[in-house]
Image (cartoon, rainbow, N blue to C red; front, side, top):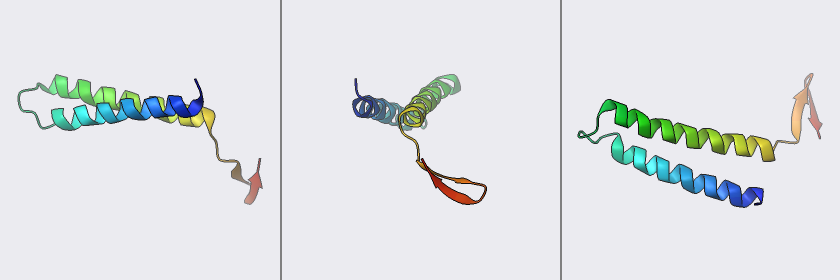
Length: 71
């Protein structure tokens, strides 16, 4: 699977988790533990997406001792 397709799938998973969290956070029928479960899943999805982006893309420009360097 290419990195763009994988990122797209991670984005979809994150959007679903975000939607579930937004529905659950104000639901008075859910316990605090259930709300934390939704929030934990959202955080997990975000971390996976961030790790994927970090692994497959990087900024080729960075500063080294005050000077702009490009890989």
